[in-house]
Image (tube, rainbow, N blue to C red; front, side, top):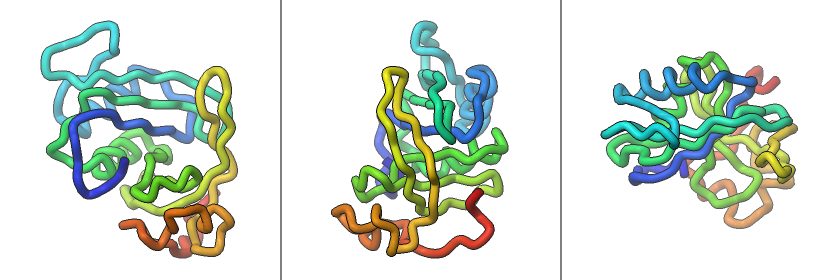
Length: 159
């Protein structure tokens, strides 16, 4: 989760392009300044990173295991978005199932809502929109105003 209290564990992101696993690994490795490998080829001290594809507007799913607890997830997701040149979605701090933090290639972070559909291959995410406080997704408890990333308009930021 993209909160201010980082913890070792799992980061689950979605990228807004069909990306090759090696490209994702290189971006995560560059952002973290440590090795990144696949789950089936463990390396001491490396972050394990699984990359696969689904449909939707964010077709590349990225799970990073053994993520370091010394740096905030949102910081690394932002750096990865810059390196990949695509938007990256990461869970926010509200537990609202439609709300995410969108890391964009300029390094900024914005609260958004997306529609999700569960498939056999994974979760597909579509119809991204700014979290403005008036989106129907904002009404889902806990409210968006409780987040570190407050609702707001981001003109020119959404496709």
